[in-house]
Image 1 (tube, each protein chain N blue to C red):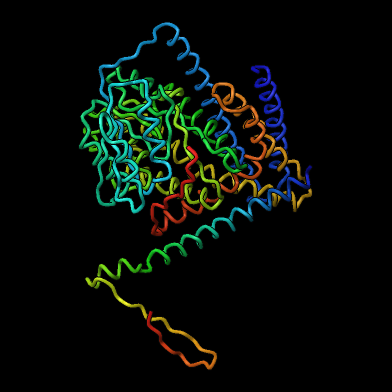
Image 2 (image 1 turned 180 degrees about the horizontal axis):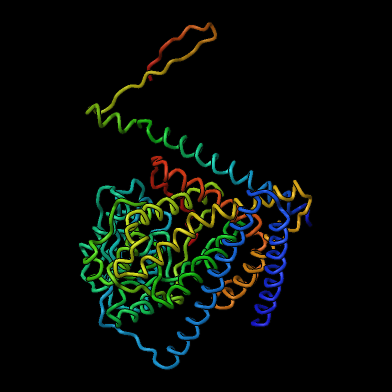
Length: 431
Length: 69
């Protein structure tokens, strides 16, 4: 398999070289300032995105190597720290029972489970109540949003560590135990887990499964080498209570409360790690419009969180990692989606006016080969199916374009201040 | 291959834009639906035990006749 990755990387180098060479030739022969400017911009951003991709992949490989070495040397489980698992739930009656059961089956026993019903108008509270007793506590409050529900749960918690788990997620049995061990280090304020898509029965959910392992889990694994994970995912995240209290718990002014909290912790000087083997299985949207709805909220929420911490963009204020992370997030959320769509339209324009279509093919091949190599690596280090690797072709051809367009529209609407709501997705109960 | 890629790229871009506006239309329809008051909401507001709804029934003659249920 490593040979396959090397093979993909060699093909990628060929495409990259040919693409850049062709572009430079066009740049030299074009007597049009717009074409020259566009080519310069595309080459610059392509270089940045490839650098980002390769750096994260190699960081991730290095992190896996370090982790394997640590596990064979010294594998111990600290059971002194009590964990309070908060499950905020609003209209989750289809999935709430399975979620609670997966938490009750955890191998780590020094914990409590607090289900917070956020004023659901379905049977969530009634179903959750069936499991009350022992380590499980079920409370309800008037509807007020996810962040308020989590804070309400934290107020009732008696643990040293707070774990937040989405009600539509199911954890693997050793997830809690694996995450707790990171908190021996006092600088660690939070640990993120891996999120896998459970309902891989449609093309659109398989594409998301690939995106989750390659675009989210691999990225977090790479970021964790520097202990700078930028988003603790909603389905699985563990926090040190003291750190949460110090930053004032969750705020209610963004639609990406997890991203906002992570940035607050980083701004306070804490480190954030990632445990790839602590897995949450979650339902991904099965319909394109639901997927757009989810990404629209994510993008606007992330932009709101960046705006809250914008003072770090041009001034490190003693936290250079915050500045790096904010620029990285801006690149991911705004610059690259705009650039990707712009480059595609520009290359289509070049094809139409010159009749040369090789640029478009090289552009697409470049990223597809990179995605194939990334997907292969991710499938090898996770328990996902090998067949997902081949979806990398569709991923670049169809999926990313649509997602990037949704991100662009969301950015424009956020900039214009268009009103929005949470946009809850309907659950199918497949976790 | 080349031609297919061109067509797919154009279609994806167009489809992406269309899908976004379809999403916006669906959400605005949902919003309108949610803003409509339910029987329970009206009952809570009126403070009564129950109340009757009046529905306009259009007959073939074109005259509107109200009926109570």
